[in-house]
Structures are given as structure tokens and as C-alpha cells.
Length: 99
Image (cartoon, rainbow, N blue to C red; front, side, top):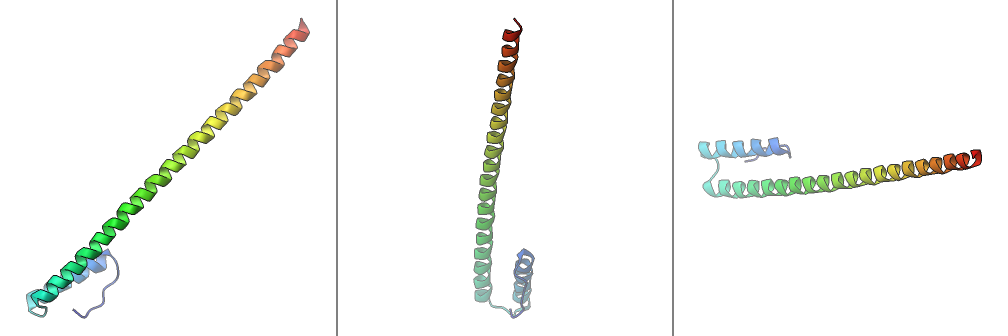
């Protein structure tokens, strides 16, 4: 097989189909086809590992974002609670002065 294929999933499929056509036409030997199939298998395995790693990283980033959002929510609640306590304290001072 002397054709040049794009380095993508579609290019790999095209190369595999071309190799299969070469075998049917008697252009490629069984040894060449086996070697090519092993190479294709290795490429697919590396892509699977890359996808798995990308999924793992995406999940880790998602957890970090959720954790950050939760921390921000807790800080907002604490700030609101502090403001409420300050308002209660100020209003109780006014009530004490009024008496």
C-alpha cells in the first residue's frame, strides 16, 4: 500500500479498507496484511487510552468545579448569616435604647 492517508479516524478506516482491497486484488501478501492489521490495532488501542485519559481528566475538572461552586455557596451563606446577625444586633441595640 503506497497511498497516503489522513491521520485521523477516517484516514485509518480508509487505510484499512484500502489494505483489504489490496488483499482481495492479490497486491498485498498475507504477511503484509497481518503486519498492517497489527499496526492498526496498536493505533486504535492508543486512541482508546487517550479517550479514557481525557474522560478521567474531564471528570476530575468537573469535580473541582463542583467543589469550588460548593465552597462559594457556603461562603455566601456564611456572609448572609453574618449580615443577618449584625442586623439583629443593631436592631436589638435600638430596642434597648428605646426602652
